[in-house]
Length: 504
Ligand code: UN1
Image 1 (tube, helix red, strand yellow):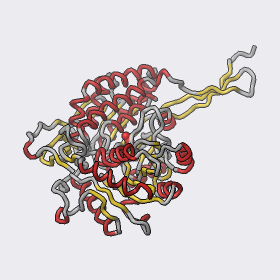
Image 2 (image 1 turned 45 degrees about the horizontal axis):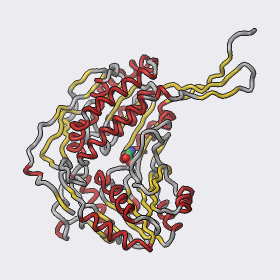
Image 3 (image 1 turned 120 degrees about the vertical axis):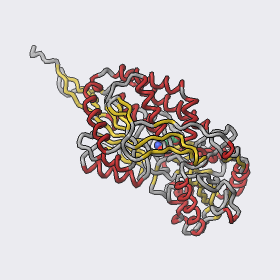
Image 4 (image 1 turned 90 degrees about the vertical axis):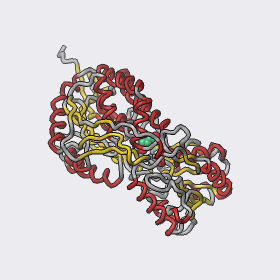
């Protein structure tokens, strides 16, 4: 592994100011100080301001409630035009905001710019929803009648988003919420408030009416305030399994529709006939891009025994050239994880995994004194590959738990069925990847693998805006996201028995 620029030498940039947005007005939060720091350079403040307080959430809810009828009555094409203009605004700012994203979250500059462009693509997709079918028509068993299924917005939707896609995930929740006529109170992860503010700024610049989208920064307490507010009509959440289950439980107790996208422990399976060059490259991207901080990241690798040694050698040699360092340096492949606290947790999990019998294939031991490298400090981690010998492997933390970092757990499979069984050996079922050129194996994978997203010969991460996104088993709760699937969550249906009205 290589490293890039000496971060201590680079000049510090000026921090941006953070403001909350309620009923079309920007204002200073009145709560605790909120500081967004660069995980690559802890001394560099990317943005600062203050959190909202409970009364701001109540004001945001009131604004969203009073804006709801007018927004719902606005023709979908007009709502869509706002989203398309916001997409253009994001595109014209993608370089500057992509840089802010890389500094705030720690993914590379190329990924940061790509994510802003992706948010624009999502806004554009939903911006064109008015051109697509708006419901269904059924025939009726009765003469002179048709049965229509039309859609109504839920009303006021709470949007709670994680740190790892600071603008794309907010866009993929807020865009469908808005196009289907809902109003929104948005609480982003406190680690990445600046990009959340940029998205709201783009929608404001695009002409979104006051009150339709409201932004509050704050901790989990504000999330609770939101989910417990009597005026909330639905909640969409992406983040950790623990928080997702708690919020889903609270929403369900109140009879609210909820959509929660939570954990993953995604397997890539490399079968003996796979193109190893292709597979190594894709596994590398799936496991280590964005420092492994994607719910769709490859965190388990299952190798068919015949090719396991060769695959691991190739992976090791590719990782030797993998550059970890300043995310804004174009030579960097992988930046830090999002915070020093996250890095500490991941290091502790690696330590546990080694104690539980995993073997380090490559990476460094978490302790620099054991031969670890100097970057394995602060928020930086070395990409790590750990092989778990057969036996009680299923209990190993690195096989079982989502660590949300650049850590890949490897197991060997005796045959194809064994490989599929190992992949299914998880409480989660978000995504998987299978590498093979054999059509029979591909068709078997479709039948065997219990996942919401299956990549054949490509990395386990990645999602297009026009197709459903979400997992099976405990990865998700409620309707799926993206594409026309999003409509299931963001609308109620009305079944209309329609007759002409004349007795003649
Ligand atoms: C992707 O695979 O590019 O939180 C998107 C996450 C997912 C999005 C993954 N909701 O990582």
